[in-house]
Length: 143
Image 1: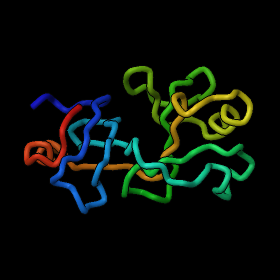
Image 2: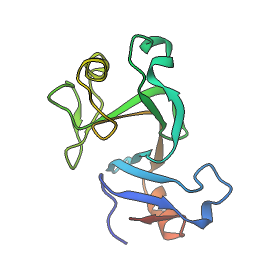
Image 3: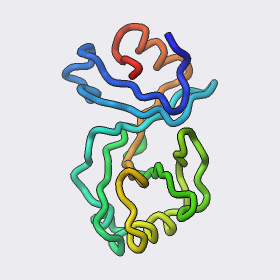
Image 4: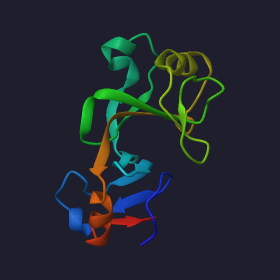
């Protein structure tokens, strides 16, 4: 099995049918000796950023269901460090996090699209070795 690392995409297998991860694709954004973090990339939340009270001044912008962990927080993954300060460079030109005022300004004033900024409610997380074990048992495949 290839080493897990940020930037990999995993997809659930039939072993996860009838679970919250059925037909799920996840982008791994962090992998280290503490564990692995990722975001579900194929499950829209069917809610818009402007529907959240603290962002009601935003233009409509889609939110994704990033995973079952920490559903009380909004996470941003973007490719616009020229517009959004404070993000941590991850891989392939992606940045994790950043100043949310900058994110809203980019959405409201700069015509960004979903390929440049993705917003997630929640994330997926595994303790050290846990995801590797799930891949080994056949619950996930690396794309």
